[in-house]
Amino acid sequence: MPDQTLKDKTVKGIAWKAIDRFFVTGITFVFGIILARILMPSDYGLIGMLAIFFAFSQLFVESGFSKALIQKKNRTDVDYSTIFFFNLAVSLFFYVILYLSAHSIAVFFNEPRLKLITRILSLNIIINSLSLVQTTRLMIKLDFKTQAVISLISVTVSGLTAIYLAHYGFGVWALVMQNIIRTTLRTLLLFYYNKWFPLPVFSFSSFRELFGFSSKLLAAGTVAILFQNIYSLVIGKFFAAKELGYYTKAKQYPQLFSNTLTTILESVSFPVLSSLQDSPKQMISVYRRFMRVIVFFVMPSLTLFAVLAEPIIHILLTDKWLPAVPLLQWLCFARMITPISSLNMNILNAIGRSDLFLKIDIAKIPVAIIVLFITVPMGVTAIVIGNLVTTFINFFFNTYYPGKFFGFGAFKQLSEMREVALATLVMAGSVFGIMKLLPSELLHILVGVPVGMIVYLLMAHILNIKEKREITMIIVSFLKKKTV
Image 1 (cartoon, rainbow, N blue to C red):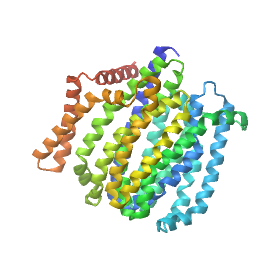
Image 2: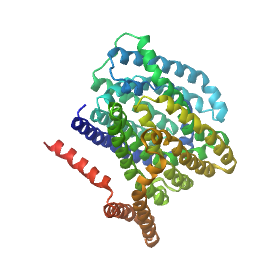
Image 3: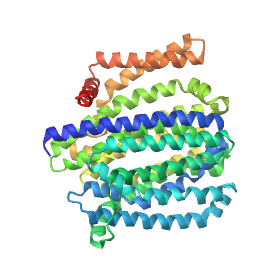
Image 4: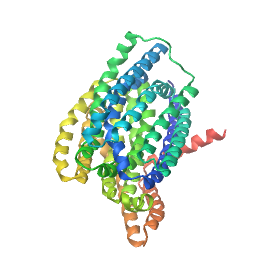
């Protein structure tokens, strides 16, 4: 692929993926605030108890085949159709497993309502399985415009429906139906816009070839899902549903922002880096720039959110959610690291080394178990602080092979973040000082957010952080193309 064509596609892909994720994040954030004001923390706790079961089911349904299809150089309709029918078959298997296990899950958490919730919400696994290949095809083509349209429609319709149901007293079922409607609508729209239907074939040779790559991702994903959801499982088991509700809501907002950036960069960077796997120098140059862009956005944004967490939660979600504030603040700092670690792991997939991806994830297990074992008796806040510690340690695991193969390891990456970290510290100090001077929490938000943004951008200009200029150029270039 010519350099300029690749650059144009990358810029366009980032721009449309950014529109997709930021608009979707904004809509989700607003709907989440409205729903949280109506519903109770225990409603979110019930959904949080099931997170690990659905996450594992979805992992095995996908089994790493989306990345295997993207990484493969010469794909055929037989490849796509084979994976489509595999996804569907595995989803049906896991639906039956969860349906039969629903009673046991309810007994485990001592929550009888979970029996029916599990059986209804598990339908999402089947519905989502139909969309996996469709989404992969769009990612390969770097067609993020279509994905943006689909996401906006499905999130908006499902969110409005959930608010209606919550308003009329449906409680936790508003959240259940929000998930079902969003997945169903998204799947239908993918078929409508993508204009692709599977062939009635299943090729075992194609499956074996793709599974050689995806099997390591499946094993690594099992470890990752365990890391991401073990906290909800433990809190749900040893603490009240209300406590898990606080954790679930506290996790939602920093994770929403962090995952937005991760999804944008990962969705664009993986196909781009995969296309450069035969050009190591160009690959590491692109990879390095991706990382700097992530840091430029994620560090100041989550720091500002942490500083303003209490007035934001108090005003937007009401007093009933205030116990979530310290959890949210610690999780903001933990989620700063997540997108960077994700990009480090992404480059291993791009060069076809999913085996190393697996080795790294296995190496993280003892650390997570030890930290969790120490913190559980201390309470939910200690568990969350332990999550931050684990996430930081995992960063050094994740950067090992990029350092070994490309000479861009943990300390060089941390060195690249110095200017952004300094600008962020000055911003945080400025906002904290403003909060001490202003009399009301509403003013803390209304004044603190613009002051924080201005101070950060001013510091970025003074420190000559080049990502500020590059991002401005990308936006201007994209807008010019839209007006032509």
